[in-house]
Length: 252
Ligand code: MG
Image 1 (cartoon, protein in one colour):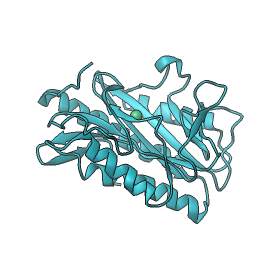
Image 2 (tube, protein in one colour):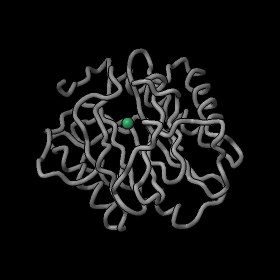
Image 3 (cartoon, helix red, strand yellow):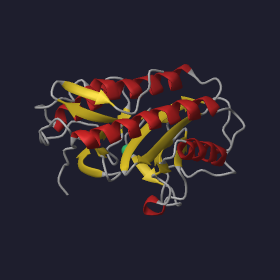
């Protein structure tokens, strides 16, 4: 599949899909508290998305059994919500969600604190978020994909963190995952040249320890190999002539 360039009409729909997802994250993030099961988090998230008249795109995607990926502490991504997994004070939880609005996808993730968390955990969350903002400084027509990847990876590594390499960002549009793949670390190749009208999901996944990850026996949950804390931050963006527009982030 080649990289799609969205028309003005499609961009309008992507903007709306992104805006609604940003709002959903704001609402869901505020609902998180110690004592909740990750299943409850999923239920609330799905309800919010459906209340906007949208479809949760992760539900049944390649067989994923929930609407929200809820990944706790050392879990990097794709955590399967469970009524047996109870959020504890001091945990960090990564919430990854996607929705479909009139046939167009948005995808975004936030890592949030459960109750009071350690300063180290706060720093990991902040740096991971900043990795996204460092990356998108280069998200502009005429630049190359690797400019974004390099900025993300170098920023994370400057803190001694592990940059997950086995999972990457992606193009997005009428499909959840479109070309190109967008690594969060410097590549040898420049990658494709960015063009206005491309819509991309940029999503640094950063571990406090090793960059290595492994998959749990459930076939979905990705954890850091050394079980160190992991954070995730993602937005859907639109490449423009002179920069980018973050589609899935509200004023909050
Ligand atoms: Mg994504």
